[in-house]
Structure formats: C-alpha cells, structure tokens
Length: 425
Image 1 (tube, rainbow, N blue to C red):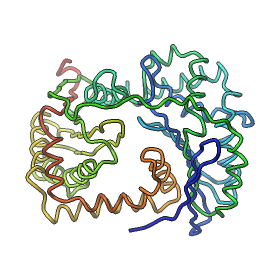
Image 2 (image 1 turned 60 degrees about the horizontal axis):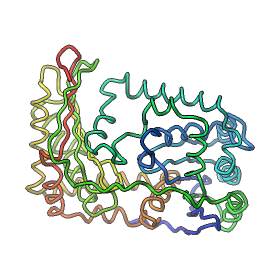
Image 3 (image 1 turned 90 degrees about the vertical axis):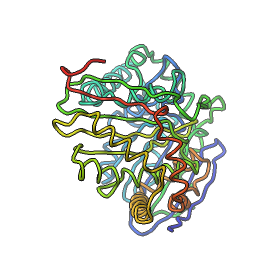
C-alpha cells in the first residue's frame, strides 16, 4: 500500500495545514476545504454554500473580478471549486514556482472577500446559480431525481433533506447582509483545512502559509453542523411516478445507508462494487447483457458523515421494456448479495477499487483533496494512507450483512421517470 508522508499543524488562528512533499514532478496542488456544506444551512437560508462557490471567484480585497482565473491560467495552472453536503472546497494545481502566488490568492479571499462583495456581485451570481439549476436540474432529462431522493430518503428537517443546489426561493430572498453573515460565520481559518501537495520545501511553504494566512482573524462563533441522527431505515417503501420530457423510462432508487467513515460503509462500498461497478458486475451482466432489459445500470453509495449516507441506483429500460420489469430484476440482483459473493467477484471488485483509489492518489491534486477530506471529515489526514487497506479487507460475510440491512423494501425510494404523456404524479 502507498504511504504518503505529511505534516499536520495548526496556525495560532486555528487554520489546519497539511503539507506533503513530492518531488516527482515540478507541480504543486493547493487545496482548501471549508467545513461548511448544504447540511450546515438552516431553513429559509438554503443554497448559500453553493452560492459561495461562485462568489469566491468574483474578487476580494486585492484581487479584481476575474483576476483569480487570469493569474492561475497565466501560470499554466488549473483551478476550480465544488460544493457537497458536508463541505465546500477550492483548489489550484500549478507549476511549483507559483506556489507562493496561489497561497496569497487563497488567503486574500479568505480574509478579504467581503471587501469586494457588493449587491451587484450578489445579484449577478444569484442569477448564475439559478441558470445552473435550470440547466442541470429543472430542464435536464431526469434532472429532478437528486432533489427528490434527498427529500424522500431523509425526513423533513434533517440536514440532508435538501440538496446542495438549495431553494431558488431562498436565494431570491437572500439579502446582502444574509450572505455576509454566512461568510463571516463559516469562512474562517479555524473552520478550514489547507493541504499543499507536490514539489516544494516544507519549511519554505510553512513560512508562506504563516505570512499570508496567519494574520486572518479566527471566528470562535462558528456554528457546528446540526444533529443528523436518524433511524437506520426509512421505515417504508416510497414510490413516485414522475412524468418528464424523456423518451425512455428510467428508474432511480435510493436507500438510507451507514455513515461514511464507518466499517459498515466500507462493506457497503465493496458490496456495490461487486453488484454495480463495471461491465463485469452482477447488475451489468444480468440487466444489460444476459436479459437485455436495460441500456445502462449503476449503483453506489454517496458518502455523507452526518448520521447516515445515501446509496443510489439507476437503470434505463430498453425501448419497449417496461421500467417495472427492469426494476424487478435490479432488486433481485442487489438482494442476492445477502447470500454472499464469490472469491472471483470479490477479487474483481478489489481490483477495481484499488485501481480507482490509486488513480485518485497518484496526482498531487487528488492527493491534496484526499488529505483535506480526511482532516475535515475525520480529523485525521492519515486516513489517506489507511483507507484502501480498509476497503480491501472487507470480507464476504460483512458484505452479506450490510446488504441484508440496507437493501430491503422498507428502506428504499423508487422514482420511475416516464414519458410525459404516459404517467402522472
């Protein structure tokens, strides 16, 4: 198993800093995770975490609008950000001689975003987010399934009941003061992890981090995520037929699942690898190749840490095949995991999982993101060096037990999308 060396320190203002030298190539990744995602949002103020993924690129105290992108592009680098239920992250991957500039850019927006945040910027980016929702959710074929599954798998009031895109009604009602308060509450050094991976000298990087981030004030009023305790099972099967502007029927399924970071989640991940990962999986072999009922099939857990996760499955019925027929075989195959898996199946799944994990870790960008995740969600960046071993050590008995617990009728949501003229809600 690979073992990546790292240091794990905190500045006086609480910023957690993970540094991992790797001189294999003259590149470096700067990765910043803020411990705020959609589950931290409160009723009436949803969509803010995702909104800030956009606002953070709109200028700060010493950086003009568009200049962050321009500077990174001019350096020959790449950058982006993303929002999830449990966090928001930002990153740059650049030639290593530009590391100091990247640290300065991230520090400037952590400490000085509000200096540049105006009503005009808020209004502009609010419209950008609304257009993104229209394109990816409202007007996309099958696009509403994410929001519907969140709402059905987790009860009203639970932190995961709404998806990261949030409510457009809430965003429309958001004032500049609401948005400023959200930033001040969560975008603080003591609520963030900075990971730097690649071609640099640790002592020099440490000095730069202290120089640019050390003067940013901590916030001792950061709000913890709300309690996500929830029953292990939904308690009933939930079904909905969704008429949509689509040509083929498609079924989406969701199950409430063990939280990310637990041994049960590891077993569930390996179970879904056996059943749904790749062309050799049980689901692909049975639904797509043998019985030719489906165009495609997928199954996998979404990793949430706040009380429970959500496992998603989907299959598109072939033309002329009722979705119910494909769905029935899907459940039949998934439930067959409860009787065990063969040595050959488990070896295949282990190979796929190992390849995926090593592919994630071989680049400095993926490794930095994994260090930030481990420190933010599990308070231990060393998880990066142990996680693969944990997955590969899952036994057939553990797979059977978790499958028997999760994949049961009273713990699933089934959304059947049909061409608009053929069904009704």
